[in-house]
Figure 1 (cartoon, rainbow, N blue to C red):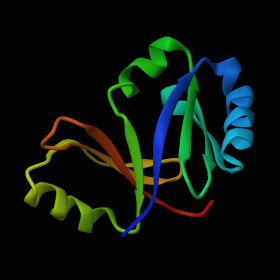
Figure 2 (cartoon, rainbow, N blue to C red; figure 1 turned 60 degrees about the horizontal axis):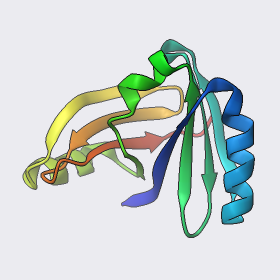
Figure 3 (tube, rainbow, N blue to C red; figure 1 turned 30 degrees about the horizontal axis):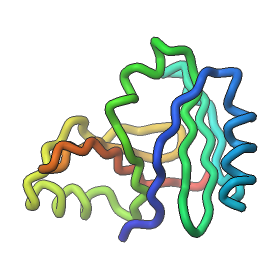
Figure 4 (cartoon, rainbow, N blue to C red; figure 1 turned 90 degrees about the horizontal axis):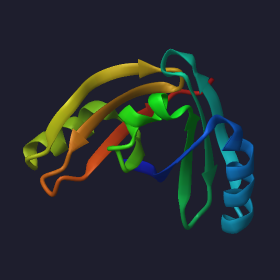
Length: 124
């Protein structure tokens, strides 16, 4: 089951709080996630609302560059189930399942070319 879908926004490190505040007010949402990803030199925050969820990825340009090709992050209940559905539908796996500070993730290119990160989340 898909639990939430996030569009991605990339900002410089010093713009994270400003950007989270902007989307919180714009969407009448709430900050639902904030964590450092030190292995990648990034800090991430998420604003969730019933209409749109935004994942803000903050860092220096050289750290952001490898992540820019991925347009969406989709939070799911079970990665393995979705991997089966995606591969059966002709999607290409770009990245095997990896541990992250908040759970596990994988990336796929859909048949239409869209690159999407799929993640399952564990409570911290």
